[in-house]
Image (cartoon, rainbow over all chains, first blue to last red; front, side, top):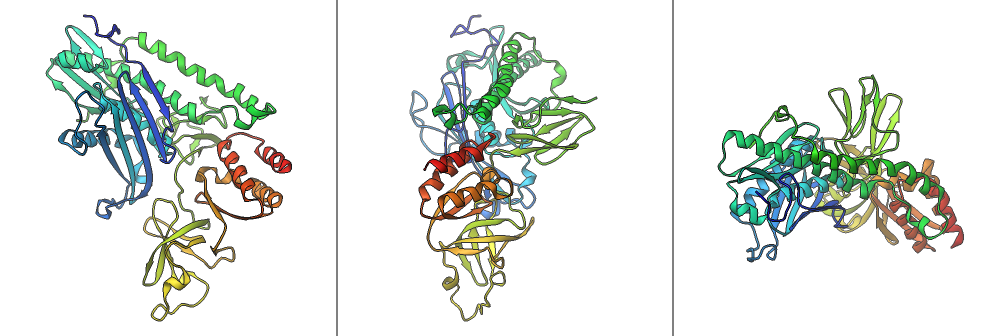
Length: 278
Length: 223
């Protein structure tokens, strides 16, 4: 079956990932997949308010997800809703296993996710942006968390469904995934599906996560990696800048390649799923 | 078997594998999983002998005993003050931590430090349960004038330089008095305050490059 936008079944929508989009925040990131765009901002670790929510031996990750009123064709009522409460909770649970919360007892880490454009897959875009923002804020993490959704349409496993596809799919299954640990930290499902197909859909989503992981790393390096110093642009091409550039540009290039290769490779081994959290 | 995946002073992101070897130990901001050492944060790889750590490039200030910090008094309590030092917790300055004797029953605490006052204090206690300041150190003071500028706490060591080389250079060339708080606040006052601002901006922006002291020296020479 052909996809609405002529993508291959295992292909993601065009992705834009940028780190440090909100200067006043401790860390921030924008993540967009096709017509879904999420902006995440992280403040802290700082004092936790209200105090009764403090935890004596670890930090508390406070997640606030909201959709902009103009993010869909029908106006979204601002403020918390049943749906946003749920997404706050699953986002927090998807990120918590990756963050070393024990390093900041009694503190609070405030994470705000805003969806400014929505066309299916807002929770996955939100998690991807959030994980970049946390890394940008210098919060110790085991790994970057990546998220992608997949579903079954006809007989194919489609990766990263967009709005129109989501309407006609039998099943839509978002997952969040930690690359190094090979663990799934979020799994939800709409619709219904046979166990055999569930395997296929999860594998398709994990494959998408691996691609996103490289994009996330690249986005972080774009902000934090070595670049030409600003002052050097104006006048003398400072040696240090040139040297740094030559030495450091190579790893950045390398990172692009596995992305292409990844897409062609078959799905990762089944043994990659060790832990499945709901 | 030693498998170096990153070199000294490479930029790493969380989850980056730095080395695959049991001969090395994970230091600050890194952790071991299996045979490998991974980075916890965005930062620069640093190797000291067999210890591998990551020098962070971002993040809030983590209090350390002995550090000089700049804080804003945010609350007055019966026997001390609470100051905001832009960290994970608020800091407490007890009356016992200031030089003069204060009879808390008879004195108006706000006469000494009022809410909103900016103080340069030393961290006296920093552990899980408490964070306390002290004004006993001769360097500590209250600021009555001058300017305050925030910079990323991760870049404070760069602003100070090796044995204070950078900060002394700026002090001498601009004829300003400067106090750097380890928590990422810099106070300064003098003739060429704008020049100090400019220097700090450049240092913060280009902190990961070498040869910064020379560039700042050149900049200040010209002005």
